[in-house]
Length: 586
Image (tube, rainbow, N blue to C red; front, side, top):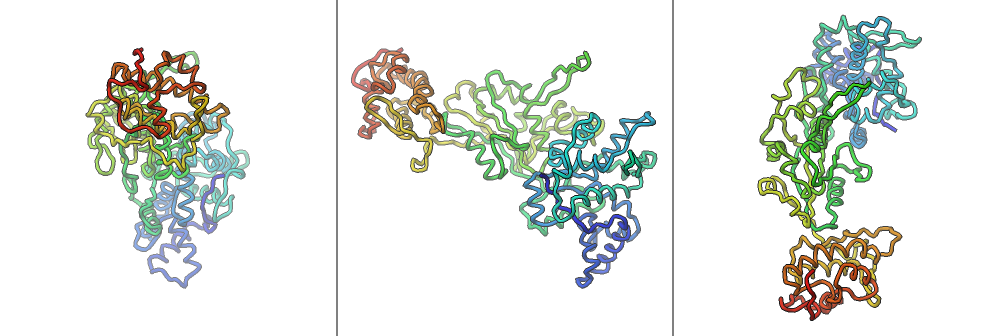
């Protein structure tokens, strides 16, 4: 259900009169005892920008009603600061739409699409306005724009039900679309027509084509953006200023602070979970990694991942037995376009497993953009026509050459990566690339008292230990006794036991032993000539290890002693095997 705040106090049949009364009220000074005019004036203030000393008030006093109405149609939007509660709820629902402006654009699209067709229906009915626009959750939140709505109508796509999908807070459901429709009809180039015995709206292009206000509206794509750092009354004042004729909102209230950050640590430390939790805690309160968010873009890198996967590429498309080639944007271009389209919202580009790809080749010329200023905007720009065409330029930019357009990272775009320290040598990152990211270490240490992923593990017929005890002892043994680096350690979530029906010991057997054998023990024995081992000397192969785990003792005496808590923290002498005997290196 989409909730819109709106008023019941609009009198569109006498709109000019209401505007004039309000303008005179604000000109003469606000009189708190004049309750009748006060209510009307407050409505005209929030919807038409009338207030003491404002440009729009002067326009109305000079009887230039059309200019003020056109500006309101162009700029009225959701979210808007009707009340502090309403503004908060609109932001929580991620509303971003300018319904009256888009209604005019829709009428223009219908006119252009039917040029030369005398009997074509170029009108938009109240039902189409309600069901295809106001009741459409993807349009209401900016996931679809008015071009998509136009295509849905033209293609006969099924619409939503306004009655079932919309609630108007502070007003009656039926009045809001009726008021908006009526306000748009006041524009000099919009006419009322009767289609299928119903009043609809159509564009009178002969009137519109020579009117600068019409083309200004058609080419306008900006939004006012709430600034959470300001008090509500300050935000409301900003919005009233924005509604004034001649005012724009190119950079006001842009979300700032975007940065490049990599979370790194041993496998299973919960790096991806950490990323999701920080997004939820600090930026998007309702974010869920399972359901995703329109503000979060995620990709997993791998050895075959390339620049064309990241940025985009031309791909063939077959239509009516004819092959054409269209640019299909990659995750970077999609995230960049979203960030630029919604500057007041933080946008996240999450790149999992960055060290498993050649990131220098993946980023290519985008590397130049990674240096950022204090606000988070790129200090340097690049010229890349494909990215500019598909992420930077808008319809309003017309014939602008994409190759001459500067590409940059905006202040609201976060690039977040994860790196497994055990994978660092798959594709090594050079120092120049590394220094453009903040590196935040994710430790394998957790608080045992609150650690829930902690079943008991039967490692032999006569020994059972908790997962916490097993993995922490392994980590200590790997670095202190085997002399390996921390990248060989494991995290607390290397195995997620959860609600699995499989025996915990079987999960350890199937998910951990091979790693310990191939990535830990083999490496350790090669380093020390077979003098130190994690496993008992009787374990001659992985098959022995796999078959014996849970029944016989497979670990070295030194490790077992440490697991029981009776071992010294001192490392073995290089000439001593972990259990007092030698085992040949594999």
